[in-house]
Length: 228
Image (cartoon, rainbow, N blue to C red; front, side, top):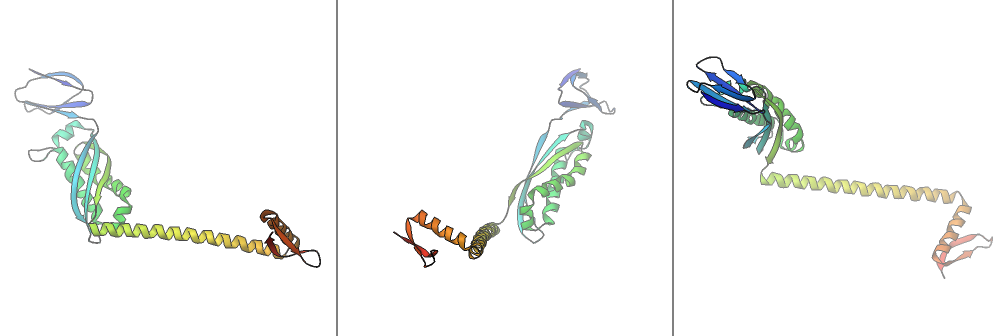
């Protein structure tokens, strides 16, 4: 007899003497080692790194994309039974993620792909979910980690971004100048319609600059203040 200890975060799948497989919960178990096969499955969340592969976007740009799949096994029996002599359950999930990347990239332009990375990741989850369920796992997230463009295209994107920033700065300067001109025009209209206010403004200017004020024959302020 053989013994095995299954941890809280594990499940054991025991095939014994050709009988239907049995799922072993946490604890110590004994089984006949002869003509038996035992697989211990880890249920903790895991990462599956899908290396970069080059895919053509909808506008014909070669993009190299890599993703990370966050998943957890929720059905240990299905996870074990979904594997065969040539393909493991993890390899099936890996292949599903690769195909999902190709589909997601091929339906978008290079610029759209660059500006909508978070949305692409959400779409990848939907594309991988069916295959994940078939191997007894639950996909928690698919993150688009690396997205590499050809060198010339990267420089083009950088120039476009710089041009947008310069245009935004120019627009902000224009808005400031317009506000200043509008304020000056309002002030001019106010002074033209109120001579007393214009004289008061002149007196304040004299007081601030320490200059002199020339009065006209009627005793009202005329001209502009001159330095003393």
